[in-house]
Image (tube, rainbow, N blue to C red; front, top):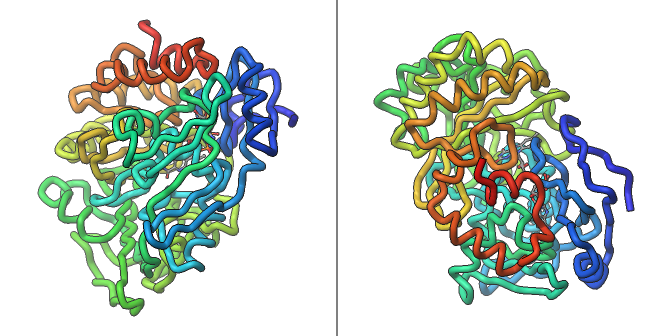
Length: 423
Ligand SMILES: Cc1cc2nc3c(=O)[nH]c(=O)nc-3n(C[C@H](O)[C@H](O)[C@H](O)COP(=O)(O)OP(=O)(O)OC[C@H]3O[C@@H](n4cnc5c(N)ncnc54)[C@H](O)[C@@H]3O)c2cc1C
């Protein structure tokens, strides 16, 4: 058992009475079977109470082994506490790659997939779309395996499971042959350029991110992450839709040092050292922060960006940085990209919840016509009824949770409010 450390950002203290750190699956089965309320905890990077429990928590910290590499099927099986940083380095050495990574690689695979964590890329689904099988301990202590091939219906409901189905102990992920990438950063892209060219820009590289502080109608930076099949860097064009190629390495927050950021300036390197924005061997971010993110059907991208632009005077003073990314459509019931290609508008806020909580409803009101869905693991103020109306598979998801967990052992305040609640 460990002390309650609170979440990564320090803005949330878990209410759970104890945090257990089992070392074997039998210990997890025993803990789950005997506890009236319990839930799995990953690397604690969520900004809201999604990972909390009114009973106890189970940390998967000791479940950190890579179990199997299947070269015939192109899959890797990992224990649920494995972090992307560990997995990425290992599979690259074995000659393989994951299709994408989030902005920082320090998060657990299970926790990331449970909340539909994503990177950027028009053709790349969120990280959960790589999952082809999960093993979990269900509420009665039984070990259950669900796979994409054999249990398609339940599997599509279970992968983005918000921690509500059970304690995931292993995941199998699709992998591809390893590849090289280069990253180039451009500065000062006018928002107006995106009216006609949003799709052109976001399909111009494997993964594209825009950063802005919303102080004016310009994106301060464009990060282009290109797939380089033969490993020989290509010379970046000096201009991109009016933005100028940066002359030095940059942090997304231009005033901060870029030493923690992944290599830029067109230098070729392995996928896992280019896809995240922050280097694996450094602690990321500027320290104290809060995050919110809204995921919006891609056809509304320019209108949604225009809507934030209208709120600049409220948003900019509270902001550290805002990032725009894209994600491909998928079939996972509780993914915000269920059957729709999306744009994501992300806000890294200063840690001032009292003021941030007043701005979020303004943003959410602007985004309402676009059916914006909040990131499950970040901060939002949307009503449960509205959120529920955005997920057509919610009734099936509720039934799935009730099937595996009839007494609500894995429920918590977040699930009670946003999945089962009516207020
Ligand atoms: C600095 C920073 C950068 C981030 N960047 C991105 C980004 O680029 N893209 C993005 O989409 N998100 C991003 N996030 C959000 C982050 O990816 C999510 O919060 C993610 O869920 C974190 O994983 P975790 O292991 O810390 O999960 P936790 O916060 O510990 O838990 C999240 C959920 O997963 C469940 N869970 C965890 N482990 C298991 C398990 N073994 N079995 C069943 N359920 C489990 C928990 O019960 C909970 O419901 C970022 C967060 C931070 C702090």
